[in-house]
Image 1: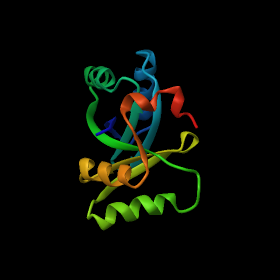
Image 2: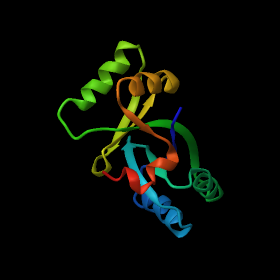
Image 3: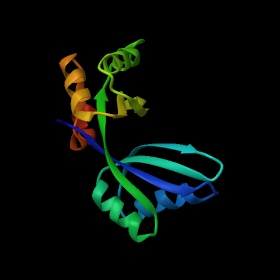
Length: 144
């Protein structure tokens, strides 16, 4: 099964906190592939796909940041109406909960956190979707 590793960073909802994370990773030479930021009044959740997730996690922990590494599915998608509905339908028919999702639209890659990665991988790949490993996310072969 192919999965990508995602960093989930918990931070206070205050000016400069997301900057500090990005700056820390940049200073360490870690490239950010894509990210998603969600917030509440008190805290934010920054989800990142980076080239070196384990190294990035250690660097952030040493900087006093609360960080977690989780596995997500990276689905290569066509740029056409209804493709996301197809993915959601396939998963929901098999009672797989979609916990959250975000995209890197220019590369046509859809990142999914689901309740059952293995089952979702089998369903999506069995229905013609190409799923990428973490290493394949950074391969030039997958740019379009």
